[in-house]
Amino acid sequence: MDSGHSVLCQSHLISDHTVRLLVSVKNAVEAGIALDCGVSILDVKAPQRGPLGRPSNEILEQVSAIPTVESIDRSVACGELSELMDDAAECPSLPTNFKYFKLGLSDLANNDNWPELWASQIQRFAGTTPVAVAYADFQQCAAPHPESIMSVGKQLGCQFFLVDTFSKLENKNIFSYAPEPTLTRWIEKAKILGMNTVVAGSIMQKDVKRCVTMAPDYIGVRGAVCSMGRGSNLQRDKLVELVDHLQKCNQGEQQNKRCC
Image (cartoon, rainbow, N blue to C red):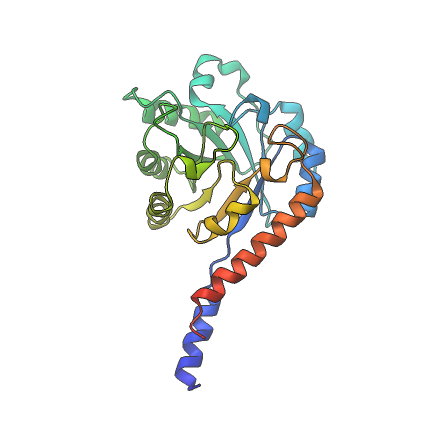
């Protein structure tokens, strides 16, 4: 092999893309397990309260108290924007070591003022960075189009673009509502805008390889690592298995793209 080709290969190896893992937890016990297993983003939510169910302040404080390395970020689900508008008193007070927060935009597609409403709620979470959450099943839950959310979110300071599903029906996931070419296009457009990308929405272990080929920055899971669905308890052995599977899928995808 000539030296020029070797340099090209080395350069490509350095730029290999690795998809990392976001895991949603519902309490401090699950948070401890997730951190032990090497997740990249620790996301806290109340699964029984919907796709972005808001955890209690007590749960947030308990998770906040768990020490982590600086490379692991914390995020929190804060419900749907329409819920906060209806009941502002339930807006959680976020601990200072939570870096990101998520608000869903269901039921707002027909409200021309949704960008302004979103901006006004973001101001209430001073010190925490918003995530632009789009629903692949946006038509079913009357949310704005994902590309509109992406564009507005960028203007409002969102560093992440997350595609999820509002519906959590059994045997359906993100691919039930958006084909891979569409999801890939959304991911690519968000990256062009300088946003980190997350793909979530009832993703199971069998879907991980499919997700990795779309090259998001993160895959978000919950039900895949729980005993009996997203509302049950997180299981260490399932998470360990998924982390290992993701690593193998990353390695396989990188190998496919290498020039030598």
